[in-house]
Image (cartoon, rainbow, N blue to C red; front, side, top):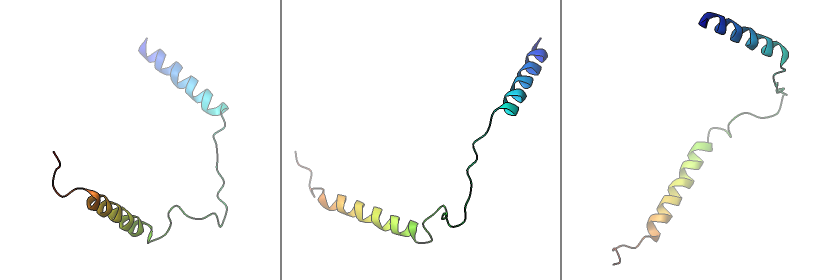
Length: 65
């Protein structure tokens, strides 16, 4: 019984795959790459570091009770 269910499932899946149209995105020259270049990550790291330093500078030195 289980083998019949698997076979029916496979048959249905194959029929669906043959019928459905998958989305295809065209690649055209000059559309750009994935990343922003070699200095994207160091720039982001500098910005994040500056953000952390600003946040630490705004904290009070001694706890206020």
